[in-house]
Image (cartoon, rainbow, N blue to C red; front, side):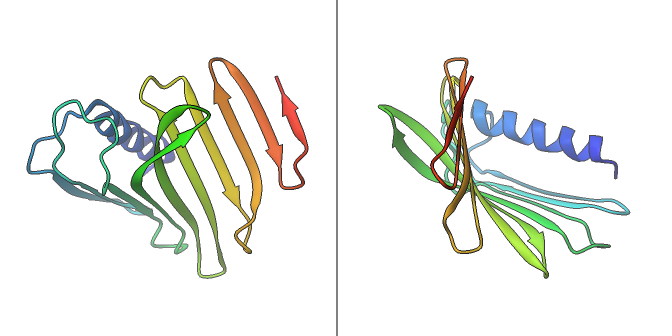
Length: 144
């Protein structure tokens, strides 16, 4: 399975998650190709729910052992807005990277945070209302 196919599947899954277009019974599916396995587990959601807590997406390359796991864990307040929060892990047996991804219902605010192996913030990317801020692990800020 090509990277384009993987990205398309992840995009479509994200659209389903964000739109709340899932049945009450939830959705589970798996896709396997020569170099990629994708497993998606989406719990039943109420119509219009934009943050389906408990949703899980896993992408794995069986040849390299590299995986990406994403779990939607709930909401969190950020600068006066309620954001949906997902935790991501990517890596292999040699090591993993941990990320946190948060987004607002109106999609005008997103926050990506990468953590180092000690659990400290390595870099934080904040996009809100068309403005971007990047903060490194030392607290240095770049805005544009």
